[in-house]
Image (cartoon, rainbow, N blue to C red; front, side, top):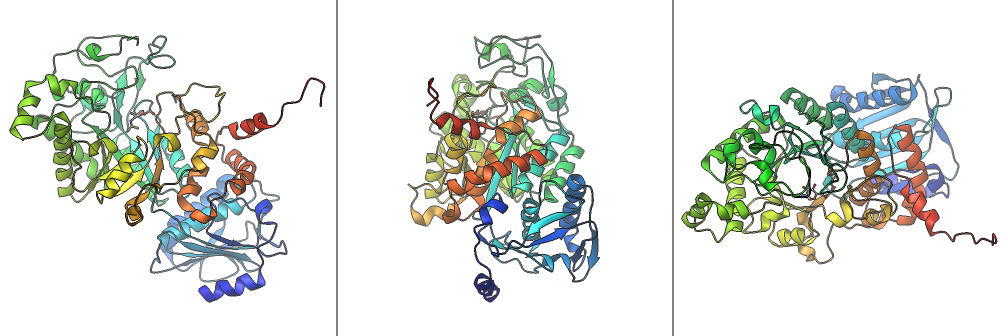
Length: 557
Ligand code: TNX
């Protein structure tokens, strides 16, 4: 294979046409174009050649894409020939996901193991014009050798603060696939809603799945919309999503929050609280307006963090273990996210039961109790052959022995965990929180923060402060989309695009290939591509640029 490349690089030159003609995001590791701008045409008569049925998932994906976008698909044939040739490598070479794509007079040849072939198709998709001319798709001769830099390339979606239906979740997964992401972190439970059916505890969704209103505007709000809202996914729907993702080589990681962010579960089963008799309204922010019944335990209608957290009782653990028992068969993922973030300790301080437990177990304090909580759940989940992921607060009071840490409060948690030889996924708020605004003059409400495209593009997942021999503990990074201020799908798209494109390059492309100038030149073509996909996106990148240009003076000079 090496020889092949040497040969090509002598007869083909890296042409000046590269940047103009081709705008692939994420940027491939190696890309060579001939000086002569020849093209191969894909049309309805083009055949897709495969060795056997084992590539069916990927072939079907391509044909569905062609049909959806251009109105035709191609016949699949066994064997070799002039057309689109998928060559499946039996044994995957490292790094997983590598592939080679060649376009020449004979057509398109894509070679790789399973995942690699799929990524090759993703690259091919971005070589296609955004519109077909007479059902013809001309693509430039090219030679690409590509592989991902990081093994974990994640995107998260919070469906608890606002619920998004099955169709949109699938669309979101499609967006991940188009950018060569391989993990979808599904934030399924929080104070404002429980979104996954658990058969043993039906009230989790019948009660915990809905709230009677939502604050209006920025926290603590200027009022309450008084609209009952919510929803949940049935286990059958969850299976559908997991399969949909797997067909796109994406693993779905479910997140079940504990011990904090548990108000929706507590509304359904008050006995999970340290103080089952205390009404939720007692914990509600003074500045936020409540709508409807305020007696007893309720699903929260405002944002932020709540003191009414899970009590670390045997009853709670039994409940959580039962939940996990229903979660595990639905999600084949090796990783199960159990939250662990932002758990206020005030109720544990007030609770005689908790104070006794701290003494009985010889724990230092409430942080020790949080650590005990997470470790006990880790043990249970490890016992079922899975690993836990937790937000970086799980470091406080001692890290669970096999836990993977998601570092969100900056890079420090990640650095600390890696130093303790724990695997880490970087999600630092200042760089990869897609709920932050991307323009200084954002026209819709956001949570705050300012993370323009250039900032996320400049993010480096391996912290400079990390000793070199610990770098391999950084599995990759993930962008998070918290949806307090994101009520509908169009806004989800607007918030993630084009920033997801920038992150995909951070995670996929070799470090030395990361070049802001090159990326920013690709942005207009990326906008066309997003438009083709029917996705909404922010044009802040263009606005900020024009803002940076000198303003004309009144004399016109
Ligand atoms: C912090 S990041 C949270 C979320 C909020 C988010 C808003 C994390 C582990 N917890 O509950 O939605 O900030 O940006």
